[in-house]
Image (cartoon, rainbow, N blue to C red; front, side, top):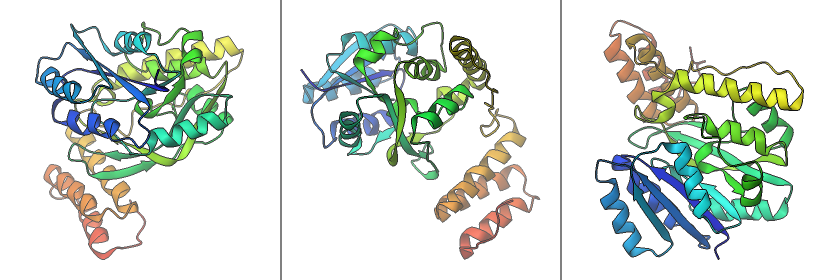
Length: 306
């Protein structure tokens, strides 16, 4: 019986699948099973996954019709045999030591029921443009999740299987933001913690759920936070917003490109900063704001981003 059951749902995962699956199979900690459910893909996802499964006995592959992410994750969890559940998405990349770091922490902190960590944000081409550091302590993570700004990044979380079962798993009435609702229920029976180390590359692209369903995501976050506050008998302000993601309009894309560019500049990813400056310039050729970013990234400037 493996210590870890990795659960992943896929649907038309496209060209990101090989990197995602490969990053799990390359883990330095090898004591895991990898449960993958192909949720009704119509592209080459099933074929690619079958090739992986043939070559690695740790993969348990199920292919069936489309039911959505939330029931798919619950189904995968029911098939799991490990005492720890590790999430993964089909478009992200885990660091090779992710599981080793998470298991070491969970072993040392039995009060922790769900463990997140820091992560780099990358785009479709794998360019790193931002890094997210989260609260390390339980109180900080609880407050973040209650406010609608979940600090536990879903595809990198490791959970205790008994705690997951005790709270009833994912609530299938949520199509999106099902993760924050789960963190809040888990946080009522144990601690939510995060590692300081980067353990995932979290990909942002137009087809990701977080990009495509922003409005629904905000409302689902609000519903989960309000329910948790009622259960706990507390009041917390709801602080979530979708302001940093584009709604698809040209003006929003312009602002997003500049935001990604300045984030990359702060990380000293200067070529990525220039890439996003040029994308912004294509939308507004007469604006001086992309030019400021290009100048700063070429001269390693210490100018304040505007």
